[in-house]
Length: 211
Image (cartoon, rainbow, N blue to C red; front, side, top):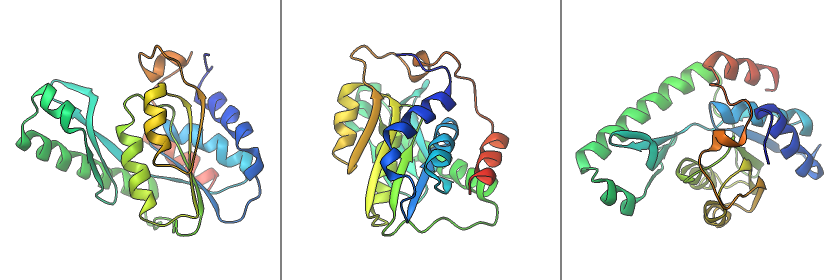
């Protein structure tokens, strides 16, 4: 299965979630940056407000794309201790990288939200959206952090992810909607014809349109 771009993936996800359209206390959260483009299409189709949930992966030494953990905007930290040991990441490296990502979260929150406060998620039906998962570390941290806000229902909606990661995330969400779970999985971008970088300006524009 190949998606044309993130917007098409979002529209296809929205079809799977169409029973939620018009539901009271529904909110869609996108994981920046690319996940917000997907989330925008979901929120628009379901007539729901859109916001961001900012979580940053903690990359391995010399391989920042390999997630050895992730930190959420409320400080929730998820670490893959087995992987940390395998790549030889020292404790001081993990602490320094975690702090660096926390600072990036602060920067992004100021950029994306400005003076707007974070949404109240308690007793809401929350749909968390990303443009795909690989190891799932970032999404896992997000789900655990959001759960602490006591939503009525927590739904994860993603276009593509490997089966073992989806099984892991299914233990953390009340419902997972994933359109494609290929056994052979390289990178999220390989399942899109167009997978260009999403800019901060684009994220801000989408949030303003669907807030």
